[in-house]
Length: 112
Length: 112
DNA sequence: CTCATAGTACGGCAGCCATCGAAATTTGAC
DNA sequence: GTCAAATTTCGATGGCTGCCGTACTATGAG
Image (tube, rainbow over all chains, first blue to last red; front, side, top):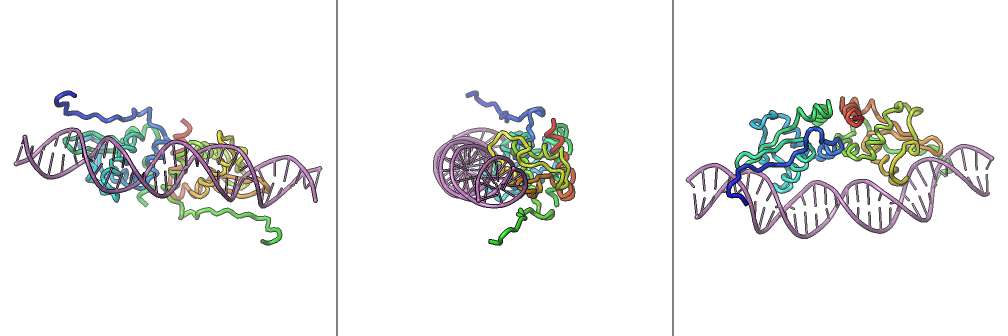
């Protein structure tokens, strides 16, 4: 183990690797859909996201971790560490490029 | 049991009862997504749909029945009997009304 | 009536998945 | 170094889900 590598990287699928079925599956869960709608009120930049604990969820912390990971591995959100916290933000541009209109349609539908 | 009631009705959710999560979950399966894209090439009228066996699927007949039912119960497709066959068609109008742009975005994404 | 066709119901099996609590890790503050 | 906060990892559990084959039902043709 190196002494102090302060950066912890997290695996994200590249834009072209994002699969439609994975995205749909990620969005099909009520807890994850809530995370996404919550993040949609934040910006996309790494300075604008929300930490995991800022998003109020009706599940335990470990379950929340699970849902955030599913969203990240599906390519829906981007996660990066800032100190002990973890910043989450939607991958709007990537999703809009890959699946035009999909995110907007889901967000609009979820808002009703 | 009545003697010969030739009509077999199938339960469908009303337009307002269609839930976003159920639709997303229904579309998240590769077999069901294939059914939907296949049906998208047919009209919406009861005379334009496709029978179950017309849609070629890499699963057994009983599994196909299961997937068609999931789509129907989610409100994605409409099913009605015509003799011994069963006609399936997309509920385009209902979906477009309830979740504008969603079906088109998914179909367009699935086509790539 | 008999038969073939189209689809269904049932039971079972394996794998995934949402959930939790408890213990561990990482980092910043003191 | 010590401590607290944020998040993760682990193991377990129960439920849902996809899949199948077999047996069954419903309908139309002959």
